Image (cartoon, rainbow, N blue to C red):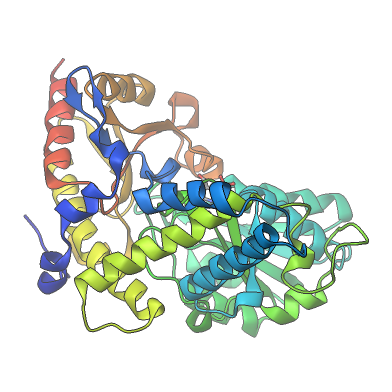
Length: 425
Ligand SMILES: Cc1ncc(COP(=O)(O)O)c(C=O)c1O
């Protein structure tokens, strides 16, 4: 098995027994077989800490904000604690963290606010690799005369065509919206470089980090992006979305809001009453990752450093799983992997991949695996531009396998055996 780029000490540091013991839902069975949750890109399972935080908020702090009584004060404290946790997660100030219903809703609201300031002929650059939630909200601004341009992907390895991006960036480009990692094929985009190029052209950068968040440490200071959005339910938290926005932009752009709502940031961007119990769970999800990091590296002191240690361990662990998965898939008759398959380039991908087996409809394969307790996804997973570009949209799209740090090598082997069985039918 190839182990290119592996950090051995970090691999040993991840205690998979402890990790799995934190996630009660992983104990599920289907038709007498243990469930293998390879559906992380559509939403990960949650650790006990998250469930407890939600329950404990509802039991002892359930109220609206800013009231002059105990449970309201507790709600305010919980919200600032969760915001501080997400600030450590993004590496920004707490006032730069906005909570919202989900990434899609947040992106529509930011696009509407930015769109208010654009004029006909202004350009926005999007990509063919992105999830539709980082495409359609911007595309809707065509109604205002905004020109949408689209960066192509290289079909052979499903990476962004950076030459195309450079050619399409110009003085009219006002914003570049790009994904950090592809939820379909696992490609990690060079978002720091893209941000540098966009800023040099005078454009803002909006990064969709939904798929990257469970797979790598986000550092908005290093990236220097203007906005970055992700969804806690993809990184072991409950169903909600969160946004990082540079303070100057959160102050400068104008959200659509009700009059009594404060003009303070970040609250002016948070429409109506938030889902407080879920926000309590978000704080706990960040704490879970920090606890994992402290277990992997006992020398860390701050929560941010603990998050760094957690991701060092999970990246190395996931890379081992994806290396074995790709190696095994290459022996399955008719299997075609979409995306980077060369172990020397694994730093450019995370542990999510898509494939097809001959002319089989991916739904048939997913159902075959599902019967055996192996949960995968099929179709376009809303990466619609990509499945169309790859010519598979009209044939049922792709089969997606998403590995996160609670998955195991045994699950990968079970999946490979089941796919061999399917291909031999
Ligand atoms: C890469 C990516 N971006 C955006 C989204 C949309 O996120 P949400 O469900 O929070 O709106 C998803 C969801 O699958 C995703 O994978």
